Image (cartoon, one colour):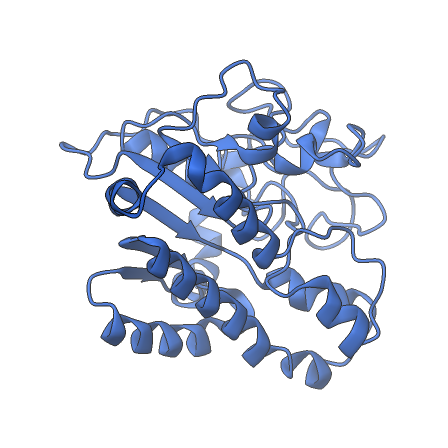
Length: 298
């Protein structure tokens, strides 16, 4: 998200904190602060961050992410990455106003699913939704020390569960698994997401925002409707495919450059898998607002 404009504040913020789970669309620094990750990863070097932060910010973007805009609109600080707090690498390690557990490249399903059931090895990351949820459980005693206090803290918090699940399909597709094969993953991914939602509600979460996912938006929406019947007023969702279809159909009117990405090189959409944004020789456009996106996300 490249806009440098201010985000209007809501008149009265109903939430005291934000907790986020997901992948590169929400990660504000966890992969950067992970012990094994090299700082040379392409999202951590220029031109990333050029539009808003004016330097790399450990986000896979030229500027802010959706979670940043949500925090700003609620009058809350940008949500800090859990691993930066845990490792003591942030100057401000306060956690009262929220923590981000999302990780670039994360999957909804555990690595064991891919390795043991599908024979897919060497996934780029091992930070599944289950891992992120376990981090949250480990972190929870930092916020509250009794069931009553936890219910109060979590009840006044906004939980963002996703976007996550896209990489569960991206990785096998990159390995040229068939679409028919990858479609069989859908119920497993939906179950992983809904299981995490149920666990968070059991822990005391009352307001959850669940973004849709491009490969499984319709199926996920049906499952969320079922969960809403069990937990009225707890879950809100965003229909990604409906919005995307409307945007793509009007892309020539919205962006001067149509569906081309800003930071890339070659091809119809200015994208070359062997020369991603951040690689030597790959140059970003002058005005990201004229393009459909900054780069191809993971």
